[in-house]
Length: 170
Image (cartoon, rainbow, N blue to C red; front, side, top):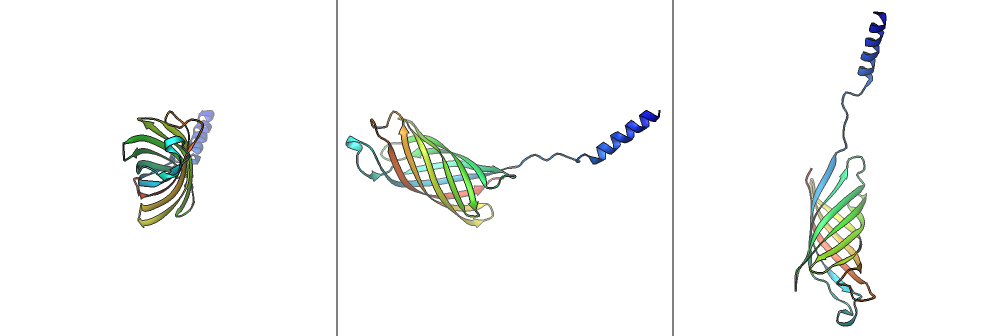
């Protein structure tokens, strides 16, 4: 009987000392929309020289967990416009090192009708407009070094400027 009482008392003390509930990490997400244009070069033959890039639209999401508010991850769908449409995607790691300044690096690809695969790096300035809403101004550089649409023995570079908005979802 005494063993039962001690066991019950020990169980009650453990229950009181244990946290009342476990809290999971919270994922904060943001919708992203940008228009991108700039200059490109590095091709050969008919594509040699510096020329204007196709205008591109990017729609994506970015997010972080509440325990790491400086470290974000993002993914986007890309649509190149004029003179013909192309479709692609990108993934990014973003470091929000100041309230309104972000560095990012990742991979980018144009997937159809032809393919180009490369890397992207950039810097973004985010101007807050209201709670959860920011304007985004972002110079970035893309270098495409793989793909069926790549001229032989060369890489294509792009120096672009992106402008858009970020809207917090939850």
